Length: 357
Image (cartoon, rainbow, N blue to C red; front, side, top):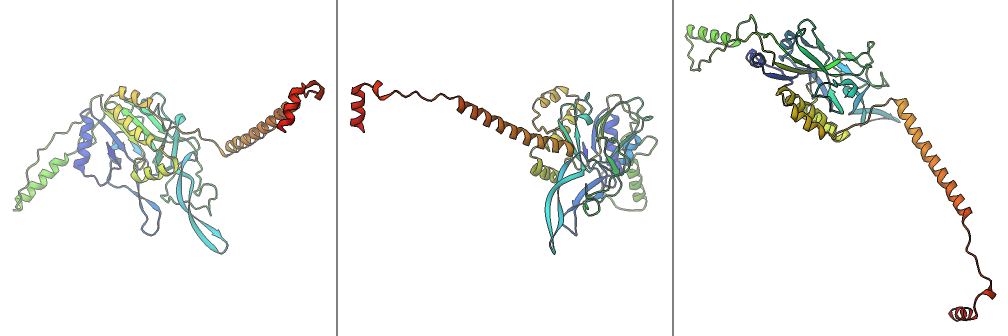
């Protein structure tokens, strides 16, 4: 499992590649951007992740695009918002709709995949779209695990702070092309090594060592064995690529837990399910799916929210009216207690009542 790969050496890439070539499973949270604290403010900024596995994944036929998916169906995020109060500007924290936090529901999940079929929702934070090369993946089993809603779009700009002055609706510009974007895929089958027809990184290190010895440099380093390069994997090789590197970040979990309680647990279950699928432990997936409890409501548009809010008011008012009508009808139908005339009361009882009085 590789999360937010960056600054990797060729030897480290070679190790990941050869693990896959041996028929192993590789899970990569391969987002192109990571979050960091703003040095000149109190917010967060995105920075590109360099030196990862992007080129190697592209050689397998899985391209992680250098852009960000934005979706009107999203999870809220607390951001500092400046508003004008008289002659003063006040900055406060508000939970706003945040298009970078893509909210994937069951209609955006692969119903036939045990990795996501039993998840109620998954939020991918600052996710990049994934493009599948159909030619390179022609003989493999490719499953689109997660995808955004049909109303989503992409943005190349890495500015993640909303500007409601320019864009009062979402705080960000809305793209022209709206469609679903692939956010996570699983691939099983035969892969060709990224280092096929290339010199081994370990052989290059050995060459540098030999050149150092010829130059008279003194070294006591232990000579590493040069492993051979496996160029083609068996059919059991499995690869899962997720277009977000930050959806399992501790900072994101902390923010999500404050706003949406235990919803962030769905992200952890996604990773657990991915590991279980990678190790072919499907029984564990069935057991875990029975304990899913971080369920969420279905997303609604503003018009639907207004409709149900008005319906609640109407139902409550009608219920009060019905209760009032039934109460009045009951009071009118009540029969008063029949009083006996004084002559009908026995003398002894009247005497006892007078003494009591």
